[in-house]
Length: 344
Image (cartoon, rainbow, N blue to C red; front, top):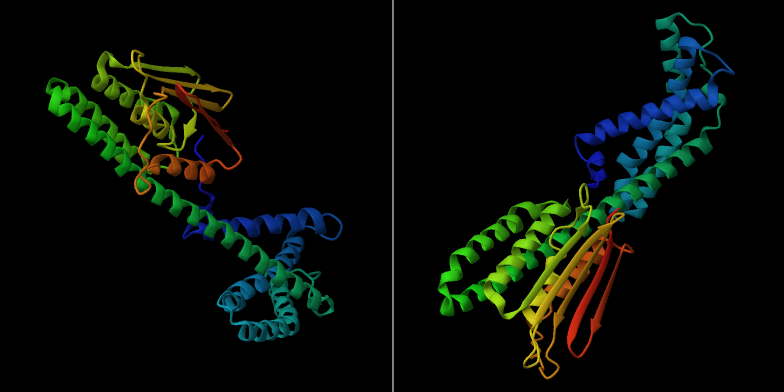
């Protein structure tokens, strides 16, 4: 399934609803775990728990809105000074505020047993504990959101590299074919348009349906089959149930593209590219195998070569950490890639 973007809960306007729900839960937990039914019930219980919730709400927001921004800007002295002033004010004045609220409730609802002796509570300890916990929670959530945004920025950068890389390779193929076999160009151009439509529009999401990714690979293989005709043994086999399965877009195509880009064969042998994709129990397995001429020594271009392969390994590390295995097998006559991804 598509992953839920939890950071939306902490962005405007959803963060307002998130915080309201959080304090409602705290309010209910106070009732269930602390007050009811040992002490009181009815409107008296509501008034007491409301006061206890405010005892937590006020120091949390005063800490995170007034004090924590100074520490984030590394203004340690100013932040520490404001923190001490905040504690003094809360310890000395918050009990009177809660007593005032209690008397207001007593007047509004005509109750006589509402708690109005908050000066007897241990406010020094609770204020220090609540402000420290609020800061730790705020810093932790902000760090998680910042790490997620950094990861998304890296992925956007990698995708920006990926699309031109694919386009250049495909256009080179079309140019070579236009010189020799122009009758095949219409079919190739149609396949290319379908590939580009998916690459430009459908891959803006973090995850796409596996069926769409497989359609994309199928179109690419068909494009190569038209280009290479009967000169190459091209096989594509897909098996398993991939309904309701999702995958990060444009991960598998790089391995397929590299096989067609680098395959070769010895004299009097048929070159081949064999691709197998299977899905079982939310595990996707890709096997790509291409022939290699043992006497061929490829030219190494450090400025241009390897972009796609390095790109996809970086994306796998970012999107599926500890959830994939990637193996390469080099032989005198073939090169093979085995990739397994846990999609759950």
